[in-house]
Every structure is written in structure tokens, then in C-alpha cells.
Image 1 (spheres, rainbow, N blue to C red):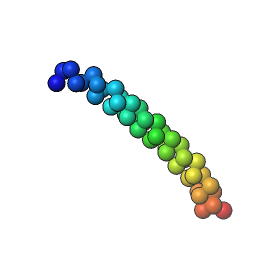
Image 2: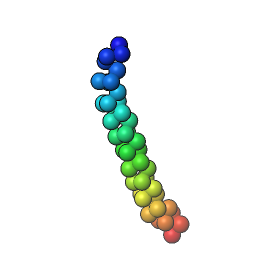
Image 3: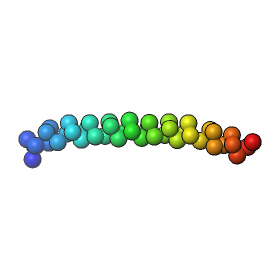
Length: 43
């Protein structure tokens, strides 16, 4: 088991980093998309 763990750790770390980056990007897009909608509702 101990020999396998380093082999699994790297792809897992990469997957976590990619997921975090994707979540941040989606959050940014959501925020950007919210503003025109809110402006349209106010106007």
C-alpha cells in the first residue's frame, strides 16, 4: 500500500487543483453574468 500512495497522490493533487481552478472560474463567470441581469431587473 505504501509503495502505491505516491503514485496516486500526484494525479489526485492535480485533480484537486484543477477542480479549485474550475470552481473559481465558474464563480467569476457567475458574478459577471449576474450584473447585467440585476441591472435589467432594476431598469
